[in-house]
Image (tube, rainbow, N blue to C red; front, side, top):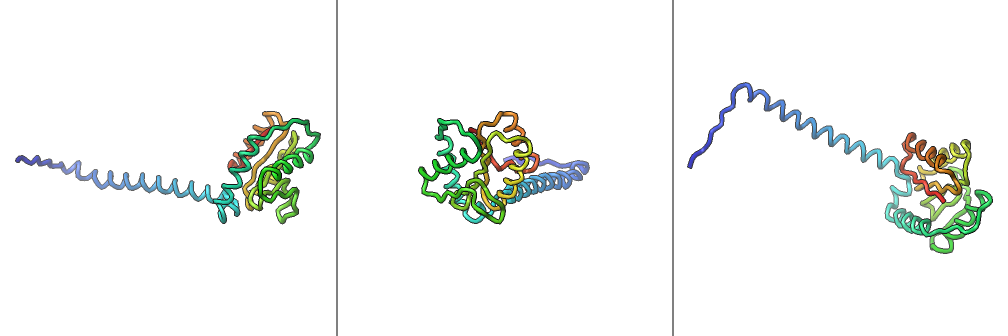
Length: 178
């Protein structure tokens, strides 16, 4: 049996600690990035998500299914009409408690579903209404999972709201358009 013996020159030996330290440094940077990303994701969760994520996921899943199935046959005249039709539809097809414009410490969300999900409804909002919507949702999202529901809104306005949400770190708030 032959054994190969490799001898390092003194020049090569001096680089090994540097390579080990570089590898440890890269691992440290990756671990730090992961930890920071996890902290940011956790900080974006609402109180409801942190306290009862399984129930929030159940509510969101069911409401998302219903919104995907919703067909609006009549033209709505204003935001209140659309909100009321939407609330009536959700009440009919779920067992969740549906509250329309409840008075809360954080304001009056359009629809609050079982104390965990807010649907903020807007009907073709103008610039001040879009900015107000973003502010409302920023506040609501601290307490509840929050979605923006837009009706009869042009793509340019939807894009504006989406871009502002991303710019403000609120990209966890989805926009659903009818």
